[in-house]
Image (cartoon, rainbow, N blue to C red):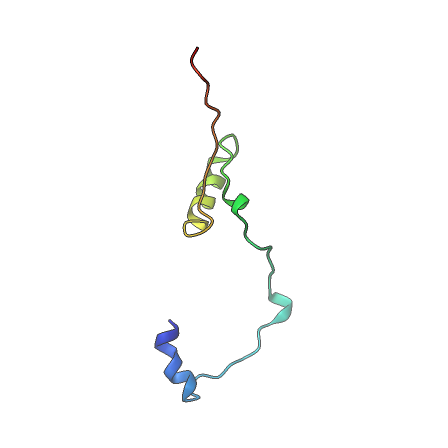
Length: 69
């Protein structure tokens, strides 16, 4: 997208405008643990995490391996 608009912005064809600060939202920094899927929680919530964290931090889950005796 930047490559498409950069030339117009340099030529001053695109004007900047300030955001509406009262409508702005904030979030926390995304960390690796945010990609953890709790297999006992809502499957739809896990699906949304899978879509959201596709690039980084990815999604993962843990299972307990039982050893055979």
